[in-house]
Image (cartoon, rainbow, N blue to C red):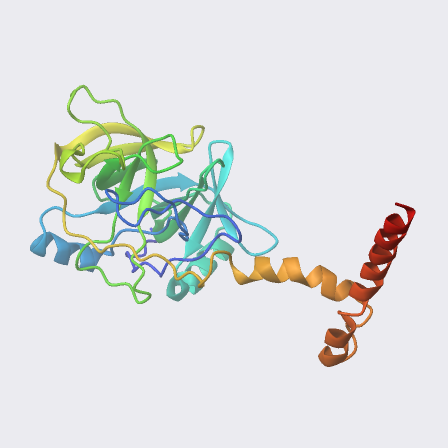
Length: 313
């Protein structure tokens, strides 16, 4: 059996150009979306998880197992086929050589992968799901809760702005380490119908005072990945829902340039006249002097017309 132990997660990667994925800064106070890189990677490695259990009995988590044939495209990127969809896989840099050797030696053998889900949510577009591989094996994992397609999510059940499906928001635990100091969260779309009337996904309403907002529920449960729905379906609770939210790192918004609109957009608006001007190749001083010249030409005809009109009168 080829088995590789869990490893630490890398920092969040950027996946968008001009699109803005949903990544609320605070599930209670925020109603606007901002840039996230997946709405990203979450969960801790095994050693960090054990430390969390000692210091904090309840913690955020998102991990699961998938099984399937791994394929590699012409650009060298890896995917796994689940259902009728292919999902991108990300391999840790210090594990990449071992992963590459495994694939080259046995490219046709399906693998069991221990993964962290990576979700990118863009308003008015389908979610983008990928997986961060932290362990792989040609045989089933011996740990409990390792059935292929099954995941364990521990997070806040809530709605995100501009996204219809409720999510389980998995934030970085209080003792987590992130060299980028961004502490991005992962927001996992889930289908979950509960029988309790008072347990509902949290929805922020700016018109309601903070002390009158509905409670946030911390859910610890097992979910099954549903490729045809691009979401996860609730199976059962691991612990009863609780209003006690574990301590976590507050996500950091990306820095925005001063002024309303980004610089590239302003530059594009100004560049067409400059490139279209015949004086562009010359020095800036000459082009600046030539700009006032067309104005008297336009004004003179206007004045002559007005004089003719006065004389005719």
